[in-house]
Amino acid sequence: MLSLLPGPSLAQTQQFYTHNVGDQVQVRGQTLQGKPHGGKRAFHVEVVRTLQADLGYADAITIVPFARGMKLVQDGPRRALFNVVRTPAREAQFKWVGPLLIDSDWFFESSSTDRPLRKLEDAKSLPVCVANGTAYEELLSRQGFTRFERGVSYEACLRMLKAKRAALMASSEENFRGLLQATGLDAADFRRTPVEAGSSPGYIAFSLDTPEAEVQRWQRALERLRASPQWLQLYQRFHE
Image 1: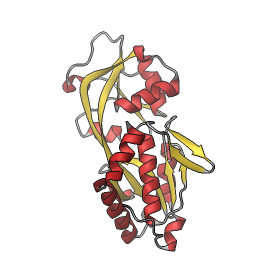
Image 2: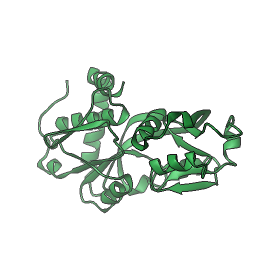
Image 3: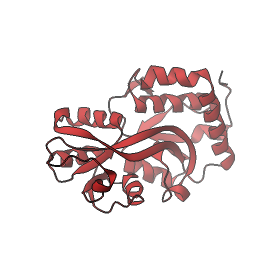
Image 4: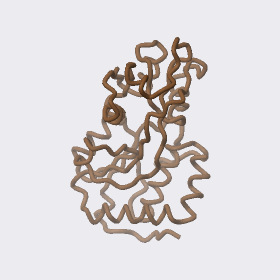
C-alpha cells in the first residue's frame, strides 16, 4: 500500500505537464484524470497522480503541446514533463525518472502504396515523416535513416502520409489509433507494416534544478508502485 504522507514543502512547488493526451483524459473540477480504459496516456496520467499523492505533491497536471512542454521544463524552475523518450541527445537536458512504460513502434504507410514495406533495410531509402521536437529523428538516425520529412505535429505527419508527401511514419499502434480519431481520417487509408521501428521508453523529465534527492525519491516511489498490486490495477483500469 502506498504511503499518502506529505513530503517536503518544496515538493508542492513542482509544476507537471503532459502532452498529446487526445481524448484519453477528462477534467473533474480542476483535476486532470485518465479516462477508464482510455489507453496509454490515461495510464500515464494516473501513474503520475498516484506518485504525486504518495510523495505529497499537489494533484495538478497541465496539458501543453510537446515542444512547448520541453521548453518550459528546460527553462525551469522546478518543472516536469511526461511522457518523454529518453535519448542520448536529451540526456543532459533533464533529470529522469522512469521508465513509465515501454512501447513498440511500427512503421505505418498509405494503404494505396505501390510497394508495401516488408524489410527494415528498404525503409531506409524512403522519406519518413517525423514530428518536430520528438525523438523519432534521433532514434531512426542511429539506425541509418537519412531521409526525413518534418511535420509540425504527429497529426501533420499523418496527413502527409495520406497525401504521399512522406512514405512512412513511426508510431505505436495505440498512438496511431488516437491520431486517426484526432484527425478524422479513415483507418482504411493506412496500413501498419510488419516492420518494427524500435521502442520508445517513456520517462518523466524533470528540470535540471530539481534536487537530486527529490529525483531519487520519485524513482523509488515509481519502483514501489511498479512492484505493488496497484500497478496492475491501474494498468487494467486505464490502459486496457
